[in-house]
Length: 135
Image 1 (cartoon, rainbow, N blue to C red):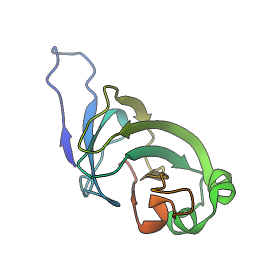
Image 2 (image 1 turned 90 degrees about the horizontal axis):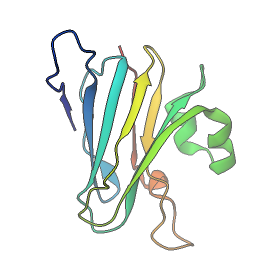
Image 3 (image 1 turned 180 degrees about the horizontal axis):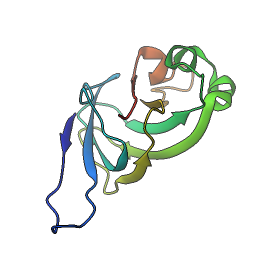
Image 4 (image 1 turned 120 degrees about the vertical axis):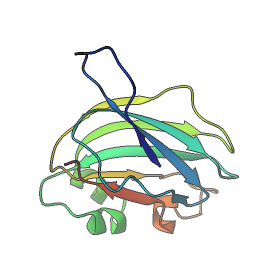
């Protein structure tokens, strides 16, 4: 992932841009530091199967480790707010983007809950998630 600050008119508010890139069953690393405030997320799937980036803000006190281990119902109980979802087919980018006002000090998780087959584990369970806390 890379962090891009788009050029804008002087005095206009700026939003950061984070390009989320997926390979099969992993996301490329996020920037080391992500600023709070208006942020645009894009998504590129470089894998051979469908993936999504599903971004959520966790409830205060919820940990990324418990989120990653929980079943679907347990995960929902740990989510304060769903930020958005972008879906990409193999080797594609969706047309849309997610615009969110990231909250300083909150924990966010980006994950993929797709399955390759109905009986297969969700990609999240294969380690396809990452987290960040805006500064």
